[in-house]
Structures are given as structure tokens and as C-alpha cells.
Amino acid sequence: MFIKSHRVNMKKSVLILICLLCSISGFSQVVHGSTKARTDYIWEKATKTWGFLAKDKEESTFFEINEGFTIFKHIKGDGTTVYRILTQRLEDTDEVEQYIFSVVSDKGKKYYLILDIKYRNLRFITWDGQRLIRYDITNVW
Image 1 (cartoon, rainbow, N blue to C red):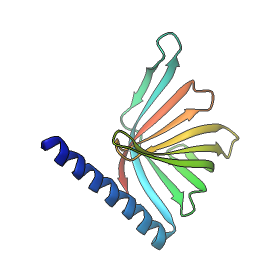
Image 2: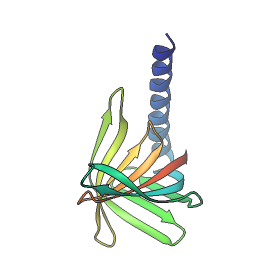
Image 3: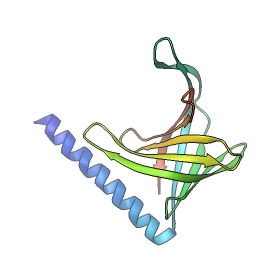
Image 4: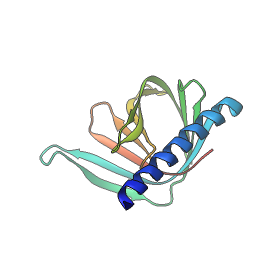
């Protein structure tokens, strides 16, 4: 009973978050968010897992996504990077609730960008699949 109730509550939370994102987009033209705690990983070929590299609990960033989901802006302490969203898809199952974008930065670097709604994090993965940077989302408005 608790698991079913928890799953229903989670679905309601996700639905509310999506509605909030849509309503915010309609009024302000932009979705905003804040993050904390950057964690870096590298792909370990031998074990086929992500190996921990470093964690910075103090790094806070902000992000913006425009209304049409065509531009993603990431604002960090050392500057701002603008990404053009090339493709996007929503994965929404019992296990996963996330947007997956392929993006290219204003410096020409290509990434997969994952906005994980269920686990409240933002992940950048290089197109060659060798590096992952994860930020924990603290707020979306």
C-alpha cells in the first residue's frame, strides 16, 4: 500500500512540476533553475561504470531554458555558456522522468544534457561518452 501511495504521490509531484514549468514558460518566457554540488566522473572502460573524479560541494550555478526549448544557458562563477539545443526527448516511465537534449555550446563542444526531474539533477555527458558532470538541482522557478 505504501509503495503504491508513494508512486501516486511521485506522479502527482512530477505532474505539478511539469505544469509549473509550462505555466512559468507561458508567463516569463524562460524556465530558471539553480544547482549545487558539482560531481565529475570519467567512463571506466574495464568496468563499464562511471568512475568518480571529484566533487565540489560549494559550486552553485544557475540555468535558464527558453520557452521554445531551443537555448539552454548555464551561468557559473567563471562565466556563462550558451548551448543550442539540437534535439530533445522526454523519457517518462515508472523508473525515469527526464528530458534528454543533444546540445552544442557557444565554443563548439557537443554534449548530451539530461534534465532529470525524478532525481533532481542536471547531467552533461560528452558526445564521446568519456566524461560526465552532474549538478544537483536545488530549485526551479
